[in-house]
Length: 147
Image 1 (cartoon, rainbow, N blue to C red):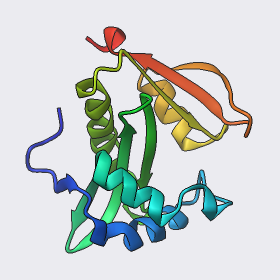
Image 2: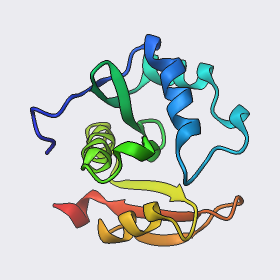
Image 3: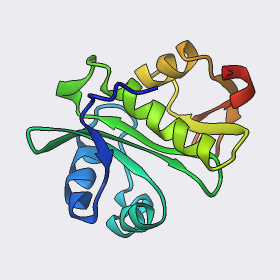
């Protein structure tokens, strides 16, 4: 469970511009085609799902989301200058909790090979299950493995 004192909250529509900017600021898993995740996609996700943000001093330092419709982790991003502080782990837990509450038995996500993210997911106990059409590694984890 996430530290109850962590500055985590649900995203609001007013956060969208900052989420887009943060998504473009990451060093790994950069979104080479911004049309793949648009402000409208984020708006829909905020209205129909849960995007979790870590905010300090009025600035969003990271965000995550689990897609309740399909059981996939939709996002996990932390500003490069804020890495290594546990922000990603805490936000990742929020996204996983979203999927657990929505009734998914298995969670999935994808990430570029050879990245810190790949190492993070391996260390967290996720299993590689293949590659997607973009060449990203697909990982999965069942809630039964966690309990």
